[in-house]
Length: 408
Figure 1 (spheres, rainbow, N blue to C red):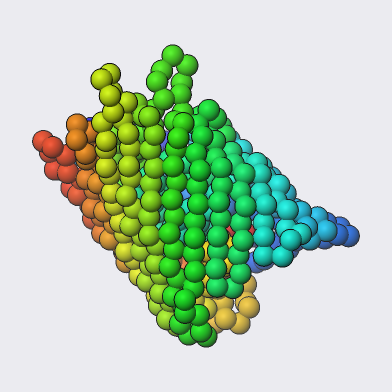
Figure 2: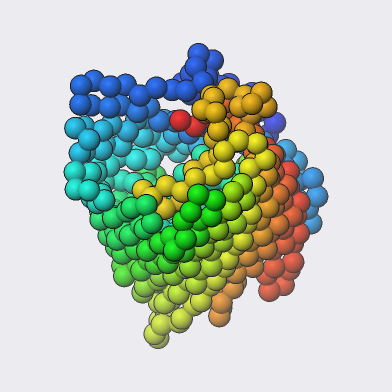
């Protein structure tokens, strides 16, 4: 079940050149903050999330050791607001380099004219789960917990064709969406599903915030390739992706009649400390020649982050998620002379073993340090220790990762 792929060291100069010469990196040489452009009632806000990941597995029980380099997310474009009533998102994902597939990351139109409500249609990320709704540049760790990635990719996640109605305020967030497939090279537009999320803040004071939520998605028509039955795949990389490994967790394509995922989310913030976690149950009705086989997968994660220097993470009602730490003094370069610094720890569990399907059972411990010397530049260093269990094998690995990110 475990599949490995090596990344030659010759890719290192290519990745570095492509990443450092991108518009995002050129911006940082000229200014700490990228300003919006205002033309009458039209506000154009440039958008970029560009990442360069470098890391490897110094100790592993399978042949995948070495160092890998990957410019994995090169997303650039703009979000445009018209008359404070319409928002247009136009963002292109240039994909991993070199030779990665490109795709439309966001192409959506939102109506904001009704107070507390947002109506959105197009290609975007529907509201589902706390970890999923953390903007990629704001995630505590370099990659999301595996169970969060697996569940959101079923019917939500990025580049999803969808329509959504959302209501949000200082203490709540409610959203319902109808979704189809994803845009791009892995297009599966004939899928049909419904996605929802309910979030509330029962406690919100100056120093304390408590967040609780419930998310769900149900695929009542799975994606279908020509000449093939409707099917889905549940899989993920081992919470790292620098080109050295395949997807450790992998069920393969499962013929489906229907499938869904339901999860609880919770977070507690106290001054500089943020503790959060989610738990998900996945139900899949496998299509058999003589009937239906019911499959059940599950997973959860818990994490804690502490802002050592700077202003701690803040809650955003539009996404019902937490923004990255910032400088308390509204400085853009070297806050207090040292920058913004955050430390974090996470444990995650994802179990894709059920009945006749053995997609693996992964458990991972991770520790991470994030540093923002400039408000749009993030440098991360992460350590992972994981185990993947299958019916006839148990594999272990350790990994050290680093990330350079531009986000604005």
